[in-house]
Image (tube, rainbow, N blue to C red; front, side):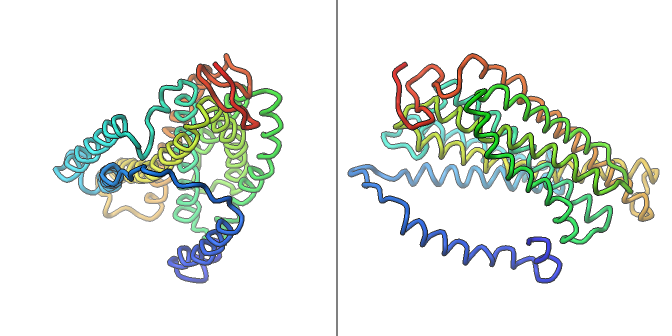
Length: 338
């Protein structure tokens, strides 16, 4: 659908179509989500919210513009310093707050922390594939947005079909083997996409994107469930919020990081191909340089994905549905004692 909109309408419509969907979601939540009782006397941490918003925005702008400003420029270093300082201040504040916006105490639960690390790695890998394949198909192979969407559609459909199967496999085998298989498939698929050529077949891309997406299906739900089952029920809201925040931040930063890295690597390859006269490069050399840059970034993304494999080995000691070292929530929603 997005490809069709980009091809036949303006790109701003990608945002406008979310307005009616948002209205439907709001109405559905009012009608069907049970109302919860407000916590009397609990204050809202506005200062904490402000620090994390400004800190995250500063880091995002720094990563997004570092390639054009220069990584060692005053603007980049200043924004990085401000962003890191505000995020650290936010963490310190949340640790001491009586009613924290995000309870960082969830990181005391080792199993939850491990699964969140895996989920973050998965998110970074997910965005690398979506970004780089779209850029390659449209910029190098000159395919339309609609054609690009159709090439990537099978991988998305397979992932959606695999999710219910993974749920049943999780009950039988637990998170360890599913996550290990998933991370391996993600890394293999990403590595294979790091060998693209200017005239590569779209079938090659569709097949390896499908392998990647099966890996995501095998990893996403098991890592999320394993983490949430390891924390007490009263921290479930904070655990879910922390997980969503970190994954969203990781997704935003990964797009900025991979975009900047692609520009740097493509420029370096173009300089080599043209002997330093990049401005006078013919279109064929420009396409070759961009393809080589995309391959470089895919290889780096594959290495990042592999980091999740040794982390997953720390999950091996627990059976599915049990908590990791602390009172937790079973898959059925019941609590147990440590």
